[in-house]
Length: 215
Image 1 (tube, rainbow, N blue to C red):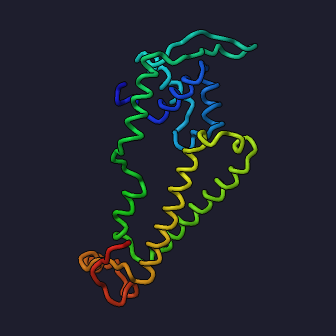
Image 2: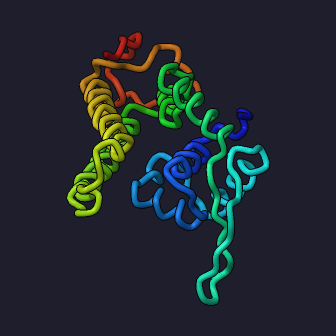
Image 3: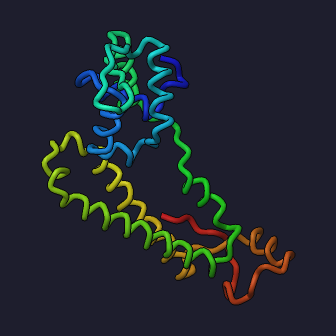
């Protein structure tokens, strides 16, 4: 399979079609029921364009059309043997082999030192509040009758996301606490950089010191 087709959305489509032939609307419905949209960017346009690309590459094939009343015709697709082989090979490799990912927050936190400590701490606390709100929404969703009846294997991605969220809350809270308690301080070179630009207040720290490793 072309690397350009190796997207979470393509994986979700191929996975649905491995279960049974479906038309795009049904694929989208199944993805939403199983909350694939928590880990896949699911938009109508991208769904149809990905289906078209998978078909052109021989991964899936149209098996027929149907019409209900005045609704537009719906094309049903099925997984081809080549599509199934690529799906399983891709899945095996991805499960076994870590890849370098570039998370948005990770890239932002690398440059936290460009903010003042007095600004960084409230922003980190605000992030924690948002994450805790997401965690509460997840717990509420867990009580949904349909979601609760789904076999656990269909809910692994949601459990994984929740675990990552919990770990992030703990890490960000520790970071904010360390900055607030001055266990983690801005390096002298950065403090001097801010002072030359008039953006550093002496109230930020009584004494700037070398940054200590955050653990």
